[in-house]
Amino acid sequence: MYALSLMFVVLAIVLALLSLASLHRQRPHGEDDSWRDRLPLLFRLVRPVVGLFAHHVAERMNPGYRDLLTERLQRGGVGYVMRPEEFVVTRRMGLVTGVILCLMLMPLAGEAASGWRLALIAAALLFIPLGLLYPDLWLRDAIKRRQALIQKQFPFLLDLIVLTMQAGLSFAAALGHAVERLPAGPVREEMRRVLRETRTGVTRREALGRLARRTGVSAVRNVVGAINHAEETGGELAGILLSQARQLRRERFLRAEKLANQAPMKLLLPLIGLLFPVTFLIIVFPLFIKARDSGTLAFFF
Image (cartoon, rainbow, N blue to C red; front, side, top):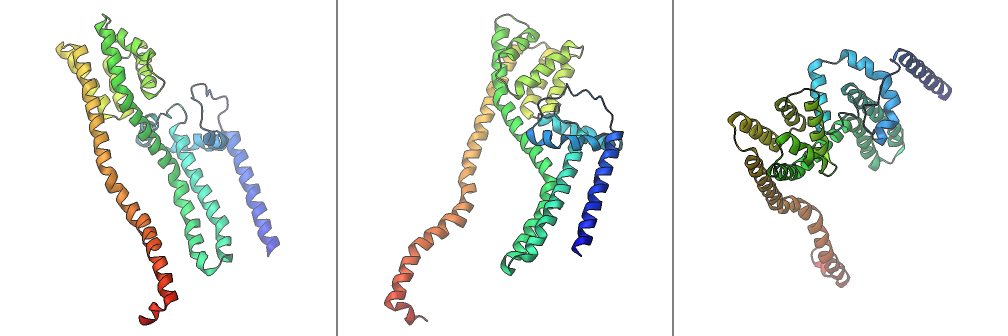
């Protein structure tokens, strides 16, 4: 029986290697990857396998779904790290990895004691949805972190633009000077992209509109709308940007105040579930020992 199982495992490995070799021959060679940013360590490890399946997935992807994934990758700051089809392949590889880990833990669950068997089976089955959902969870967290940095750094950009415009520069020249003096971060990356697009012939209105769609931050959309409105009506742009910067800081202060007010409610559940039981045990256990030694418990039992 063991020899038969071993034979099936070897046959499965051979078939998998033959399939990978066939996919490698069909993969288009000579692709230029100079456009990519530095890849994360985990993606660098799995990228050779991802590349074998990516072009097959790309041929079958729905255009609307591709655009949706592209937008999410750009919002997470990884639009120049991986393509949408590579993200889909990574998600499927996570599912396969979860299934493999589940199958590896199942024999251990069968040999475990009856008290641990159900827990090990539940842990093994948990690897399957975790492997499938991990890429999406990682991307969602990347989007939230990046949007938080944009909301934090964007008022500083507006202040720099206002200062340079008050010194006599136009909005386009002030934007270039401000971007060069920004600290490294998502705002600097996005504004440099806006400058590149305007230099290649894209109108400033369209470049700013793309910026608002890429970031998905309401503060950026409001500023872009205010700039477009000022250009249409001939309003004073420096004053509008200064008021927008003050408004963004006020909104950030209100968000921080709201989170501070929510903190006690969020701490209530860990306090009730963890701290109170421990405190109760520390107080009651010595009393229980004394009552047992003195024979007081015999009166109740």
